[in-house]
Image (cartoon, rainbow, N blue to C red; front, side, top):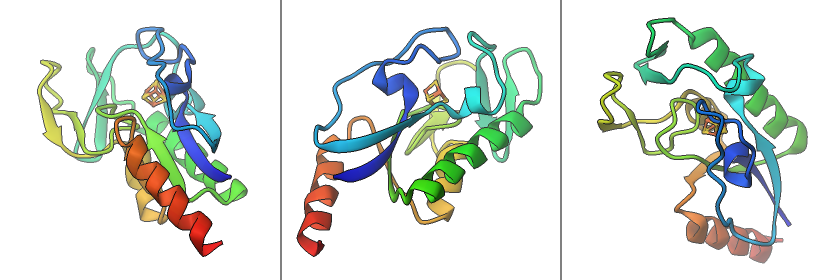
Length: 149
Ligand code: SF4
């Protein structure tokens, strides 16, 4: 069974900034390892929303929370390395977990092409990252991996 790191909010954990989850059906037949990088990095639930611009993450109230986001990303990478995880399924648009898009830093709901802090770090380490709408692609990877044995 393929090991997959997953955003904890997608598995139903109420760890989002607003104290809610983003629970949804995920591909079956995977061994999921949930993590919420923002909580791992020391941030509370709920918390002030944050957006990433370049390498800096700021909350809506203007606090620089980059360090906590980096700590959380490192925790996700450590888990992946410890467990030999090469795939991740992360929540799109998040400043930690965003895969193809993130909010532009203006807190106005505008998205830009980009990735979250955790996604960036995982990718640098060679982990393949998919978003929650790319379950079919993840399943394809899993079948390919099975064929290779
Ligand atoms: S940091 Fe990732 S796992 Fe945590 S709530 Fe945000 S999107 Fe979900």
